[in-house]
Image (cartoon, rainbow, N blue to C red; front, side, top):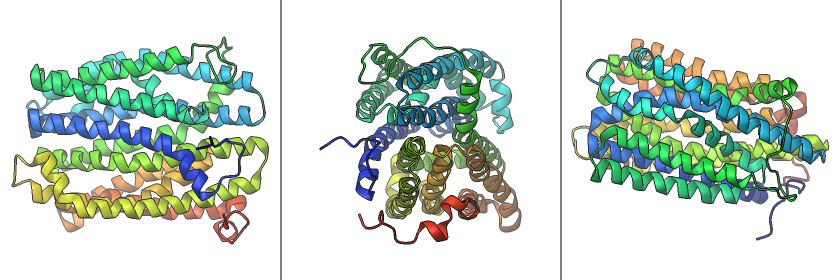
Length: 454
């Protein structure tokens, strides 16, 4: 199949095909997280799974720094390439990777020092805290490596090396799965084994990536000497802030929800919430892949000044995300029982409840793709403010508000509606923001154009 270039006109087919490698990369990465959860639950039990679910929001909130650098950097790199300034693109790329390492070195000891406090904020007590510490301390010792990998997740598209990124992700993921089985199963290392497996696999990924881009090749980007430009750092951080805020807010929300669930339902509720998160990771990987493509393609077309192509990419991406959202929702409904059996089949009393929660929560699939794509579009257009507004509403304000209001009115189990309701509210906000922005007004954007007929 002929390679699709950023300079081409993007039809529905080309947009999906261009996104496919990064979607597969993200799915592979997220699928291996599901396997992590499976091993932890089946080898170590519900309390260990709950401990991992309590550490995860803290970890992914910090992990989002790499996402910010990768997302904001992708738009800037793509803009430089679209304008023909490859040297500036290389310097920007090198600076981003260096910043990821620096942030990891600075932040890791801070998080480790305050870890107990962060876990207690979620309601962790003395019975589950040792499990959390056993898993979390080791995970954060390798934070610089994790931030480099998270930045590359977004950068592969801008670097036009998505197939390489996919293959590397598969290798890293399979290494993680094998080490989970070996360290937790054969060597009985418990949660330390789970954390060590994740960290060793992450080291492998970052070493391969850094080695690859240390080799000078005029046909692609590679590491070069660079000057620290505060204007570029500010542009990258502000433009990628929505991706970071989205992840931080999402995990802050999860932290709050875990606390609410512990109070209202107990540790089994946290474990059930974890099952939903593992499953949703796969679907969110699809939406994330299309969003990452939108950032790069829109940024490139903006550098070229091609307004018509930008509008076409916006519409086609929204249509694809709505369709894929419906398919994701149907999969959750049809296979909810089987998924619950996979994770907590050893406790048959918990299976029906887990399946019911998954069905209710999966309604969010109908809106997530649309919201994430619109946010990515604004990032590609360097409209960081609109993207930040969407991110904060999607992952923080709306779901937390609903999580406190609904259980007070309808009872404890209404908390499972918090994420679907919050996502629906945010979808309405996205429509409003698109209408406000004249250049992307939906009533003008979605009329038949030359792009719609391809």
